[in-house]
Image 1 (cartoon, helix red, strand yellow):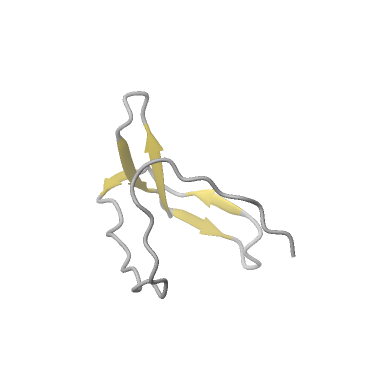
Image 2: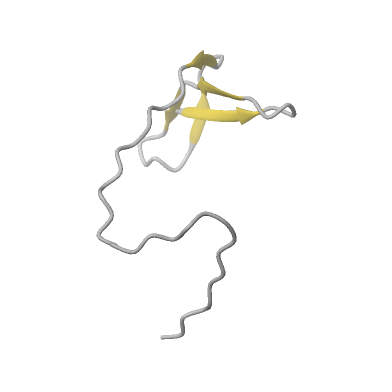
Length: 66
């Protein structure tokens, strides 16, 4: 699995940690030392269907009750 660690100075590093699970997937164990890996790439974002833009600055919002 890949985990992220954020350090006190704000930097983030990613580590690959080798794990194994039992046959039911309910129990896991670490099988080796973690290794530094590259962070994930940026995900693509779909074009917004909203046509109204909000100017930069403070924005206030209200709760919507359904």
